[in-house]
Image (cartoon, rainbow, N blue to C red):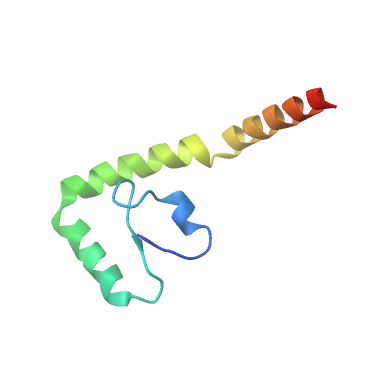
Length: 78
């Protein structure tokens, strides 16, 4: 569960790998916490989806590979 400010929404796909709620809406946050507590199977599915998303898009090794590929493609243009 993240708020819709900063880089947090990039980490979570709403309703797939977690929930994105409006900043400052404490009731919405508490509702999502309670929902996940009461729906453990959905919680576990979101947990898996979040781990997958993080490993595919935000791991240092993967990010470095993408950056190197970008540099190589740019160097070929010059």
